[in-house]
Length: 106
Image 1 (tube, helix red, strand yellow):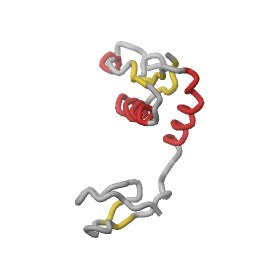
Image 2 (spheres, helix red, strand yellow):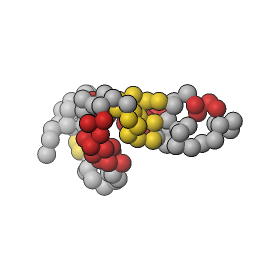
Image 3 (cartoon, helix red, strand yellow):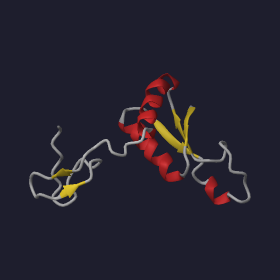
Image 4 (cartoon, one colour):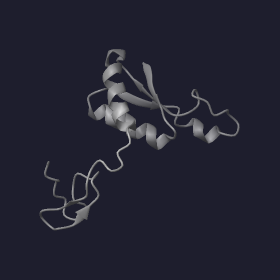
């Protein structure tokens, strides 16, 4: 196993782990239960929640995906209107929350 990412919190660790798993990279979160000991434990890279991958050969691909995750996205995607129900959504959403229709690419 190889540590590939140190998260700011447990939620972020699970987001990154899920993103890697969805890309076919076996990943798991470690250290998620240590947050309960903060105050008694020092907060270091070793005690913060982290994401580990099973195959070190997938490290470059995993790091590339993580870099994309960490890249700021503010202003990248424009708001869009659902073609089916007319609901307006922020650009980062890929499906309509109201009717469930997927956003059409482009």
